[in-house]
Amino acid sequence: MSRVFFHVQHLLGIGHLRRAAVLARALVADGFDVLLVSGGAPVAGLVLGGARFHQLPPLRAADDSLRDLARLDGRPVDEAFQRQRTEVLLDQLRAEAPDVVLAEQFPFGRTRLRFELLPLLEAAARLPKRPLIACSVRDVVRRAGPERVAETVELLDRFDAVLIHGDPRLVPFERSFAGWERIKERAFYTGYVSERELAQGMQSAEGKDEVVVSVGGGAVGAPLLKAAIAARPRTALAERTWRLLVGENLSAQDRAALAHTQGIVIEPARPDFTTLLRNATLSISQAGYNTTIETLCCADRAVLVPFATERETEQMDRAQALAERGMVAVVPPGALSAQSVADAVGRALAGPSLKSFPPCDIDGGAKTAALLHRLLPR
Image (tube, rainbow, N blue to C red; front, side, top):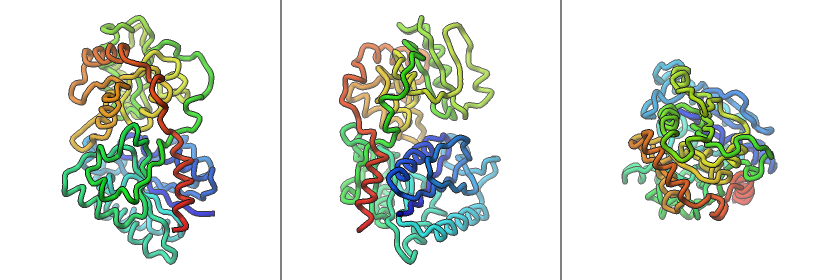
């Protein structure tokens, strides 16, 4: 049985870890022995489906600019902490002696973790039996200048493969990565990593004809939730129930500040989210990887409100690519208000149903496993 050593780091939300867990489950189902090594804050209830799990000394983003790292209590990440994490990571690698090393996002992202990821790559290359080394990356990466692109291409010389968890018919990787021509020979599209049963799910009338407003884990979701509440009376759906799913990382202060009015339901994120999407008239959400794929597969119409900073352009690029195809309405970063959300709701209702578009490839877990089986003999 081939062993996979899978490094993942979530910094702000939990989307990276959630997707890595789905991928780990798919690899286990196809016969791999997977160790998922997480460097972010512990997440309760993570379903691993037989994959093993190791928690590194955790760190997070210091704030939503994602420029600096911090420990969970807010203290800065100093050199001693970095050395400790790196030693733990490398000890784990040597003990595993894996056949495959997967680095999630790096070197396209997670560059603040060079202190441990560069030693990890070097140590993997020096193992008695060199493993297959691959990058596991989303459909869209942060846009970067020429120097950063050149550095990424150079670092990718240490990798045997780039596994792109996306569908090029929907969002081509070269749209966001300017160095595509220099890496495409070792790049492989896998399809989106999501639950294979996503489009079916349980049968229920829950959420029928509602508007579902979701913010993923909720770490940066408060502005969207407030704008949606204020937008409701300005839309053609003002008489419908608007269900706000706040996410576990929304602060208690932000949660308390949400206006509780008739027709507004405020509750935690739910495990039957895809059922709510299937039954709803409209979805309003951010444009993270996991939520977007669930929306495309299950919702009828959608408004995307991407989170963006100077360093985070991924959600905007993904949302814009879908808007250009006429699939969704988008509220651009910096334009969020009650009126901009209401206007986007109007555009979404006037546009075509998502169900009228060809389905996207959501079998990325199984296809990633099949691809690794194919690449390993090399």
